[in-house]
Image (tube, rainbow, N blue to C red; front, side):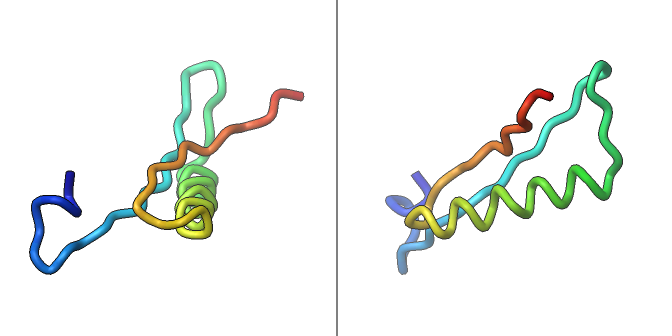
Amino acid sequence: AVRESTKPEVTISCGISCWTAEARKSLKELVQQADEALYTAKRSGKNRLIIHETSSQ
C-alpha cells in the first residue's frame, strides 16, 4: 500500500524477530535476527516483510 499511495513511489522492506516466554532472547539477538531478516527481504526483491525463522534443535 505504501508504494501505491506515495509520489514518488516509496517501497519498504521489513525484518521481524520474535520471542516468547518459552524461547527468550536477548535484545542483541532480537536485533541481529531482525537485521538478518531485513537483508533477506532486500535480497528477495525489496518491498517485502520477512519474519526470522528460528530452527528448532
